[in-house]
Amino acid sequence: MAEFKVKLSRLDIAPRKVRAVIRTIAGCSAGDAEAELLFRKERSARPILKLLRSAIANARVKGADLDSLYIKTIWADEGPVIKGWLPRARGMATPLHKKFSHVTMILAENPNKKGRFKVALPVPVKKAKTTGKHKHDHARHSDKPVAVAPEAKPEKKAPKEKKEVKPKKMGASKAENSVKKMFRRKSV
Image 1 (spheres, rainbow, N blue to C red):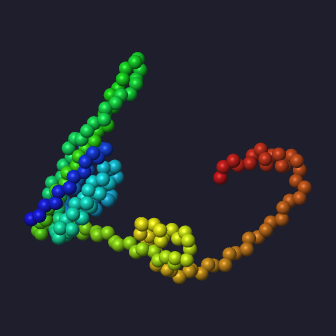
Image 2: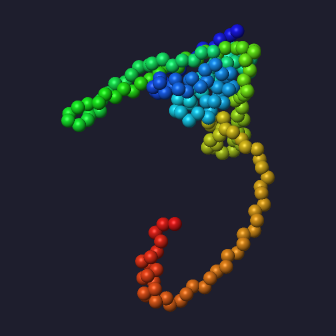
Image 3: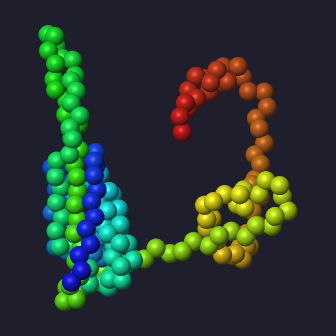
């Protein structure tokens, strides 16, 4: 049984808040944990998901079976604390503590422990074709791959209906115009 250890240092979220999310995925299979973290609304869910995907990538490179991976252990330690203060009434000060945390995760293989969800592998992105005719062809000069959408058939547009034009009133009185101006709607 191979183990894969990853660590996230100096996460700028308090350990208490990170542990609330960690408790939900401890002991789950990698696919189930990934599905759980995708739908969590807490701010600490995104960095933990990124850490999990990093561990899965390490396991894939080393030849592990991705469907049998599970989170063996995961914990959050306290990191450094940035200390400051906030001025308050009567010349007093309130201390401010910006807490950081270190998250450590160990993935292991267990062929008997299969999850409901499978680990999704990233889809390779195709590079855009360039013509090379133009001097400033941005797709050709950029290092980043550009996703190319498949060509779709243009849809036929329905002909627009003609709107009926109403004749304007001619010679409206000054009093009528001033009342309209006074009670004109300001917002829609």
